[in-house]
Amino acid sequence: MTRDILVLGAGMVGVSAAWHLRERGHRVTLVDRNAPGRETSFGNAGIIQREAVRPYRFPRDLPTLMRVLPNREIDIRYRPTGMVRATLPLFQYWRNSAPQRYARIVPEYAALITRARDAHADMVEAAGAQNLIRRDGYLEVFRSADALEAGCRQAAQNAEEYDVTYSVLDNAALAALEPDLEVGLAGAIHWTQPWSATDPGALVAAYADHFRQRGGRILQAPLEKLTRIGDGWQATVGGDTLDAEQVVLALGPWSADWLDQQGLHVPLFVKRGYHMHYGARDQARLRHWVMDSETGYLLAPMRAGIRLTTGAELARHEDAPHYQQLQAAEAIARRLFPLGERLDPQPWMGARPCTPDMKPVIGPAPGLPGLWLAFGHGHQGFTLGPITGKLIGQMMDGESTEVEMAPYRADRF
Image (cartoon, rainbow, N blue to C red; front, side):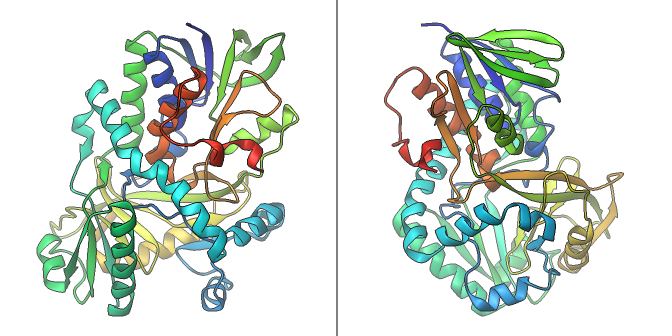
């Protein structure tokens, strides 16, 4: 049965949900204050991950906590005000990172990651976006032999349990693939399954363009009000009133605020991140996406230049940017690879919506018939958008889903 559906949020998750619902024959309007793919989905590392079957844990060992506490690291920084506001979800995050709890979370998380690339493949082909995709994986480089050995042990376990594929590169093999990297590195793990996008925002826009070509409607205007009216929903968008039988809330880090207005609380917090594009000196060339594993940043050869993306900053979403983390990463990255001048007028900053149990929220809103939730993907919204959209479509049409959806429902909280 064809329904009128409103999808709020035009990042990778929202666009993917709108795309799948339109392919199912529904009348779909996609709403965002910005053009598709211009918020959090714009600023990521652009990797469509298959190997990332284990979500990011909160550090629980004393050495890591003592390392992070001075607040000078590149992989993780924090603002005291952000830590105070998110005290309860961060405490729950810490608890869920305990070995027994984490062991239960991993297979539920992996059930999405292992299906993500194939879900992208369908959309890439339909949208004719092959020119934005590379299929040569990425390199996780290590500076010490001990860290490389530990990474290889985890990779072997992931290969056994989740069919992850990879190859191990010693110093010479790494230099052959990336001759312009710093000398003296211990080696790398070449993750062979992931794809990467040379322009993440453009890939989201390509999916959105195909959605529009197939009859979907895109409305660029701010959401001002969302109200349940009778058996349906009414939204005020840019001064206009839109009526819909069902709504998909895919507003990323803004989702919790809109749910609070409906009387439903979900413990969402944000990890902010930064990026900057650079040229290259001395005719150097970066041939692969490269993660500096022990330091906590990534270099990506994108269309706009070599993108440096930072680790996470725990802060309030609305806090002013703090560029010291990016500056520290840049100083180390310049030793790893001969980066040239900065190409952007100022650094980009975005916020990743995170949940205390590291899993996204996908499914119906408890007590709010007709409202569906699709947010909280943490670092993996770009990867998980298409599989989330596929599952949302299956759920909304009352079909059996590819995976058991109970672990992702909002009522788990």
